[in-house]
Length: 126
Image 1 (cartoon, rainbow, N blue to C red):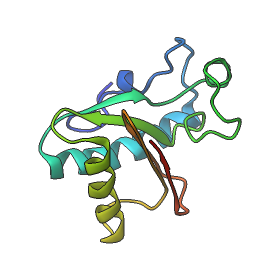
Image 2: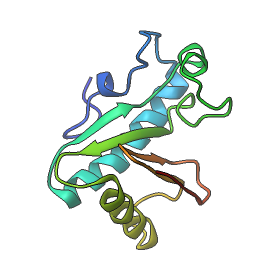
Image 3: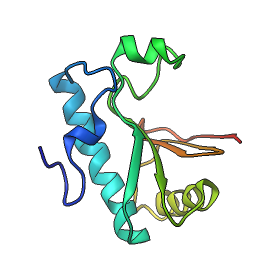
């Protein structure tokens, strides 16, 4: 199922094969729309390392109990030609300018976490 010009539902599916609930799918569609905006700015594909996580999968990988991934509101992403730090700052600038929804933004050594929780939360886990 195509969600945006460049993102499909399968990219966001839980890695344990669990079915995505309908209320989660609506959040994933909203998230994919935001990620499409990032992709349009950087002019290259974004790879989704982790999108929706079923509660069981989230627990199995040691995710926090109130993870935005379980709600379908978060994605851990990478791109080929931008470091996680560069991608983080591009996303931060897009949020500041009103081009992206406010939410959680975290940088890790190998990826960036972006979520659409609606409140500003920032962290650096490099």
